[in-house]
Length: 349
Image (cartoon, rainbow, N blue to C red; front, top):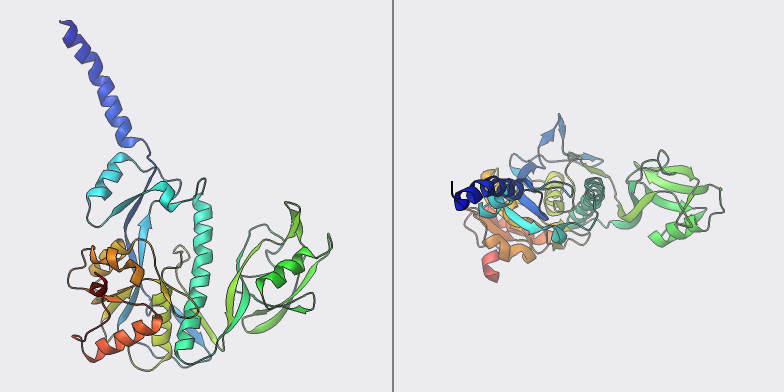
């Protein structure tokens, strides 16, 4: 046996080991794949997803589908084999870890933030839909989340609207923060909140954290609605990107006629209380998911139009939705004539 042959035999197992390590060792990237789509006009577990009390409803026989993306979680071990698969696939995408997650972010933290964003998204969608109908929706301060094991747990609930703190009317988040900070050590803070349309008195005793009194809640912008509207989505789905589709679904449920003409419409986009549609992540994966669900139209935030045009959307039309009102008017025009000229992402190409 020659020295070269011996060296080759010794090197072969090492090379194989290196290949195996490269294929299985986790790498600092995040994968995006098309996720599920959900018809917000449908039922889930025997109940309508959009539920209303105090206003007449109108049910549509078409579909308005929110879209999602499967994103590898912060602590997932993404291997070279998985990265290569998603890199090559025309439906998937790969991004640097730092472009998606903060350093040290955990899966639990990510899910908690997603849940908070979902609450805020739904409330903004309700406000937008009611404003579109001509209602004047008043802003408010609400509870977006309650930390497990915190002083507020069991006393305050998500979507509680703050009316008073220690006898002082609440008009901003600062009012709540200052009221808690001024509380004497070990003394309860008196809150008056609106919960399910009723005034409720609540007491919470703050605890010190980092030298400041806290009760363990996350505050955010909320609204005082003239009647009750709820969007009941699987809690495993988080984030703000379904806001536009929620607002369209709520508007369609509360007004006569149909926005879908009995067809399947899909889309994405955040929406604020004024109805402006904002950008989201994973637009190309969402378009693929909507195409596979048989959607005829896909509502695209204007800032996502460029990337949307690069997605394999087939014959599904990409409609640019700058505001919720733009989306409503486009759908009404399409209902009258499926060949109607609609705001299009091609305009920006």
